[in-house]
Image 1 (cartoon, helix red, strand yellow):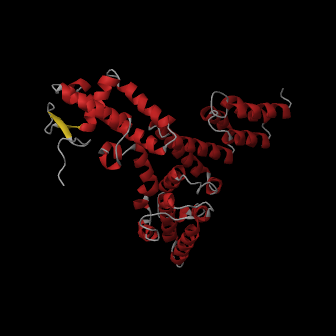
Image 2: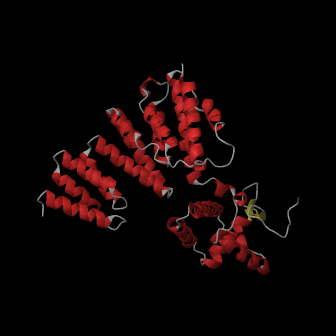
Length: 385
């Protein structure tokens, strides 16, 4: 069926702008037009103000649906702004010579599509589809597979075929699914080489995460199997693999950052406890780099996960000189990572450090009152009042 040409879709071309010394003209889409209209008319030409508005929607929303849409729109806005800046164009240049009545109608649509976020998945622009979150998550799930001695793709398709193509697994069906997954692992483990078992388990760790949204795992049977597989995975002799150590560590760390069902929680201490001094330095470097990049990309939840893992590494390796900088960076946004650092210092005969961890973190945050209370209790217990 042909489109009704009175209806303008976001990815439809609004106009073409010829650029100096560029062969192809810039194709301005209606998404571009709607964003530029809002920048000019709603936010008085201030791109930052519009971005802040969308960022507040992302941060304050309790709905993942609206959070994702806000991220999509921010990414389109950022990329459009960068493109216009490089081309020497202003927002007003995009609107030049436009019919006022047409812009009036499009402004109403801009408010509905952008500010109210009333658009479907099939309407998104390429910039809205390929957001930093989706790019980083895709890399964490499958991005390093080409570097494995045996690619996990060898098993991934077959694992996916164990699931329904659509629909939902209720609680009772989750038990059947878990048995199918366990039987698949048992079958393919038999006679497998180390590289094949690594690929098998790595495929499992991604496919199960990707499919978890369609499973009611209230009894935790699939989650328990996942934890067992991950614990076994991080106990492989990775030094015996025909694979760069840096790549193996990068892959497993990004998986832990992006796996969001607590499936890697029990395996993290096992992983950290096995590190050699050389590997500790590598893991520290990877985590610091990830933390910085995720913060810059405004992927706050994953940045906090990375910071928590960095604190775990310092606790596990008793790197006491890093406790105070970590506590300062962590603040009072979460509580357990602070209390555990303080407890580790106290257990190893460093009461002053145990107190200093609290003092370094205290400030505005969700758990400030609780951490101040724990700090006070510790001062009394240590006779530091």
